[in-house]
Length: 239
Image (cartoon, rainbow, N blue to C red; front, side, top):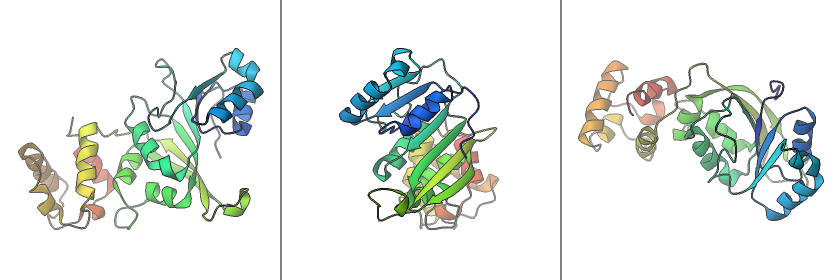
């Protein structure tokens, strides 16, 4: 499912015991791994010492939410992400990655099903949210594979999804101000967009009123009903 390009550097979030890390290394990928657990980091350094010594494996003990791209060098423009994301950090880490300077060409992530549903949600569904918009403005799904809880030990009470996301040919990364605006709007997602616009500062109000006209959106529509492509149009106008 991952089908990573040969030799592409990989950012791995949560390598754990290093089973997948070792496979990636054996395939010739340089791996930049972020692991928050001190004991697991020590285990990885010991078990994969030859790769650490040769700099093929670069370990960073840190909170991935604070360091969404880990210690990935600035001169690397093309890379992939492999992540086994705990539910507690999945949304926060994803927002951090989408706000970073460089987007990966592909992401392969193990997520709890609820998190995956929210990331892939379409306009008009109850799961549709600000993160759905930010992610789908940059990536498209390359496939999703259900993973029942019984595949893990101990078995969790929820199911997971192995999700692949491929970067769009022309991604639209929302600026910090655009993300703040959309998140603010979505705190009242069931109110009419026209009413919410009235509460915005003057510069945003005018911009959004023009956007409604440009996209032929009725002021009575709710934010949760507005399509990702239309939010992308708004984002392009906010520096």
